[in-house]
Image (cartoon, rainbow over all chains, first blue to last red; front, top):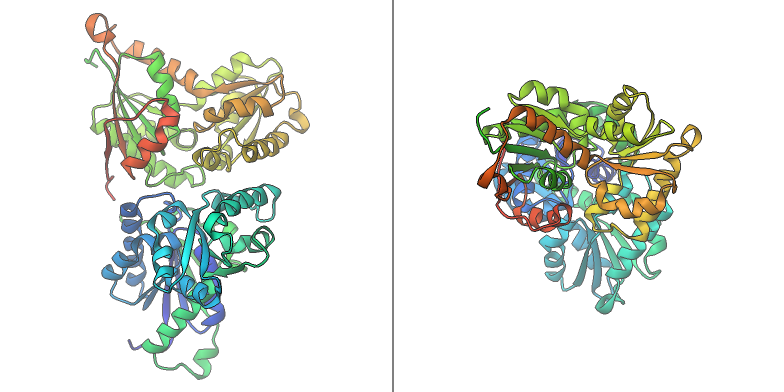
Length: 273
Length: 273
C-alpha cells in the first residue's frame, strides 16, 4: 500500500451507512471516501443471504474498481450475512459493523446481558449473538422491521414510532433479559432514533451505536496499513464521492439527515444488470 | 392466438400482486397463471421511474419467454410509472391496475371527488389523477409509505396501524376533499387493510380495490383474444406457477395471506444480473 492519504470505500444498501460515514469523518478526517449506496435494491434487511451476498460482493468489486484501499461494510445486514463472502471476494481489507458493535457492548455491559435490535435478516443470522457469545455475553436479538420505514418517513420523534419502539423493546427486555443493561443498535438507521429509544428503553440501559466503534476499528486498521500522514495533506478536508443505484435527487434529499450535512458529488451508477 | 386455454402472466414487485391474482382466479378460473414476484428488488414504491421501468420490462420479457399470452401488471407502482414502456417492450397485450381502478371509482362516486392512497412513487406519478380527470373526477392522492411495511409485519388489525391510517386519511380527506365519497386503494397491499380502513375512513366513503375491476378488465380483454373455451378443459382448475427473485420459503410463508391459499410450484429465478 503506497498511498499516504487513504481512500476508504464505504458500502451500504442505501442511506443508513451514512451514519457510519459521519463517524468515520470525525475519527479519520484526513482521508478520501467513496460511498456506495445500493438504493435501487434496498432494503437488504428483509432479503435472503444469497441475494444480500450477491449484491454486497458486486458493491465491493465496484468500490475496489474505484481504488478503495479498505472497505467498510456500513450495513449490519450485509455484514451479518455476507462479511465472509465479501472478504473472500475482495483484495483489500474489509471491516464490518458487527464485531466493533459487539466489542463496544462487551466493554460496557456489567450484567453481561445485551439486547440487540436489527432487521429481520440480521437477527436471523445470529451474527451478533455469536460475536457477543465469543466475548462471554448473553444476548437477546429482536427484529424491528418497522423502524427503518418509520425513520425513512421522517417520523424520528413521532408518537407512532414511540408506540412501535415500546412494543418491540417490551418484547426484547422480557423474561431472562429483564436485567439486560445494554441495547445494541444493530442497524445503521437506528442512530436517528437514539433520543426516542433513550426515552423508551429502561433507564439503566446503555445504548451502543456501532458507528463510533466501527470508525475506531477502521482507524486502527489503517494505522497498520499506512505510513503516518503529516503536514499539509493531513490537514486537508476529507473528499467525498457518492455512488447510488437509484435516484441521485432522492439520495441527496433523504441522506442529509443521516450524514448531518448536504451531500455533493453524487453520481448514479448501474451495476452489471 | 391459438391456445384455447389462456396463459396469463401476472407481475408484481413482490407479494401484493397476489391480491390481484386472487381476484383473477375468481373471475377467470379456467386459465393457467404465471406469477412473477421481483422479491429480491422490492419494494418499487420508493424508487425512481427509470429503475422501476427497467425492472418491469425485464419481468415482462421473462413472462413472455415463458409463453404468457397476456400480461397483468398487478403492481400499482409499475403500472403508474412504466405501463407505456412495458406495453412498448411487450409483444402481447398488457393490462395495468390503474385504469380499471379509476373506472370503478368513476362508476361509484357521486360527489366526483376521490381520495387515492398509494406508494410514494405511484402518487408522484399522478397516474391516478390523470386517469380520474379523464373521467371527470377530481382526486387527492396521498402517499402512505408505512402501510406496506405494516402489512408485511402482519399488523393488519393492530392499534399502531389504525393510528397510522387515521393520520394518513385525516390528511387525505381534508380541505377541498372533505366531501370525497370514494377511497381508491392504489396499492395491492392495501386490500388486506380493508376492514381497518373501513373503520377509519368517513362512513359515507366507498372503498375501491382495483383487484376486482382489473380481473374484469382482463376477462374482457381475453374474450376478444381467445375463442370460447368449453367442456372438460374449461372446468379444469387453474394451474399456477410462481417465480420469485428472492427466497422461495419466505414467499410461500408471507404470500399465503395475500392469496388466501397455500402457494405451491414456487421457483427461484435470477434475472440477467
